[in-house]
Length: 595
Image 1 (cartoon, rainbow, N blue to C red):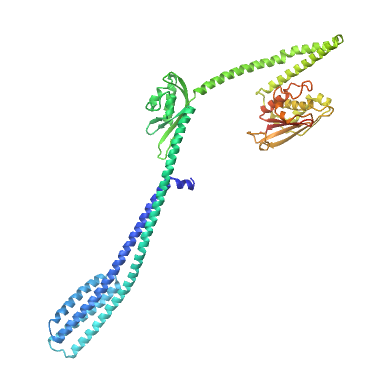
Image 2: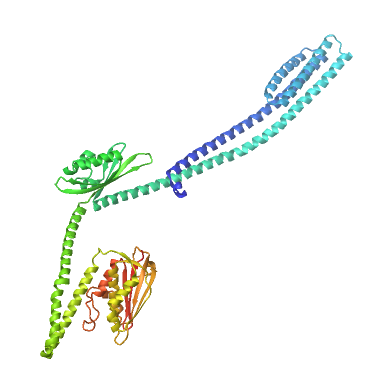
């Protein structure tokens, strides 16, 4: 199957549609994944903001605690302790929240652990300073040292928190970039997915639409083909039928009903109903063929007769062949033809062959009569004419001698005519055997037959070597005798005949006169003379039986010799052609198949 047929196939459309759905699903999954990434990016940015807020709140709560502590130490007013204790509580809550938010960030977790130590230390310093406040010992060096240590711890806490905020801001910047990139790419990706999906759907739709148009065109063609098939069945007198093997059901074409002498689809297409039309003498034979068909799922040519309701007997010929479709369903497609006319024509042909054989026998009888019974009286006539010339010529008047000469000439012509007719009838016999023959010997024998005429006319005959051919020997010898004799007969007066015989092998395609031949090469034997020639318009007429171009008083002959030549060449599935020019000469070309 070539690429073009694959592209047009239904399977290709199904594969394309499946790929389209798969690509759309993949692109949809990609878009969904990208959206999830975008949402995650938003969450990370929000998470980063939350961490920053909690860090700043911790720092704020610690400041509140520190402010409450200092206010209490200075004023000893217990109202300042409210902000101190609430600050500590809020610090613990924010710290717990912050620890949860940064659980996936190991660096921040480490910072929180460090920060925990500093906050605990700072809170311890707060507690120690309260002890000095209760004992009114605020002016001692130990108290000053605690305040200084608390300040340093608070500074370290601020430093840690600032470092955590800086780290978080860096993360925030990176996540914002990712977020912005995701926001920028998301519309492009979604738009690309939509475009690709749309293109795939448009391609699939175009292919489906094109297939629908092709299907409509093919359906129209099928309708036309169906109608032409119906007309063809009517004209050719045949009908079709189908046997669906798996379902064991039959279907008959309309014309099969007509062949049975019934209206189309006038009865159910079953084997039993069909058998009702079969000739009683052929029922058993047909049943055996059908049983064999069911077993072998094959039906060779079978012949049987049917009887129509009007009593007409028709001869049928049927044939069937199994076909399997794409779904492995088998059915036997059969054709039944009405061959009644063929049977009648065959019978008529047999009668004509019988008549032809009878005519051939009569012709053989005629040949026998012509060769024996007719020639015997003719010989006696010529004998008595000879005696009259010898013994009674002096007693005859001048007119009597003239009549005697005319009788002699006519009897000679009659004898020549009988001989030529016998020779022509011999060339019509098809039972002659082909033999490998030395054509040069055949040519020499022909010259010997014409030796007296050759010497009499002082003729010059030159010939090329001819290879051994598979021919009917005596017919080819007669061919050579007739062609050479024709050149001798129609030679110019007082000019010695010059006959050239040449041979060569030719390609059939190079010979324009040879058409629709089954042979590729031919043996070409050419006979060329310097005789009186003839006009080209008579090139085909000279081969017609009894056709003469010259008056019988000018040149002797019966008009059969060249007809015999043509018949001999045709017996060898060859061709003979003649060309000539008046007072220049003639050329006869013989083409024999190269086997």
